[in-house]
Length: 223
Image (cartoon, rainbow, N blue to C red; front, side, top):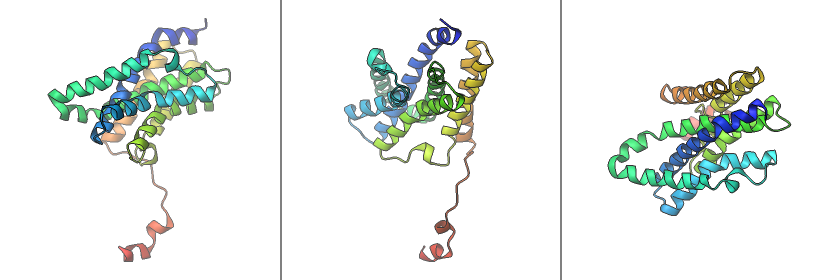
């Protein structure tokens, strides 16, 4: 077993469960905000937690996908939905306010996991690792927002997919240069989490490509 494989079994399993838990919570909170019933909340939580990993596994040709062979992921999702329901009894406002953190933490963990899984693939070039890290990190949130009739964050000004791309890039470089396995997990995770949270609370954003219609004087007259 090589070092990357050892790293996978020693550290990533726990991070994966934690990422599943936090992303499922973020999905459950959005579904709850939309007044979905309990079945709808579970479905949205599952899409958020497993959507990115499922797409990644299908693209990389991993069969069956991870959650099919490890049903514990489904139990983690059920537990996260139950946690949201119980916490609402005591402090609904606190749970809503924590949604940004849960989403950011899930993004960070899943980005690193996606990059790590791609590194185990025979074609683990830099672009493949970064794209798979981004897909694993953001695709679940995109599915969540589409189902909940929201504009996905990656299509807005907010720094979201860019944070995932940064984390995946750092992970690739650290592994490529044989950094200690624990550092190769923590540094990109904290980089993705930090950039996402700082950009949210400090209102950092990517520039918008201006359209001719948006800047047209006729537009102002119509208003």
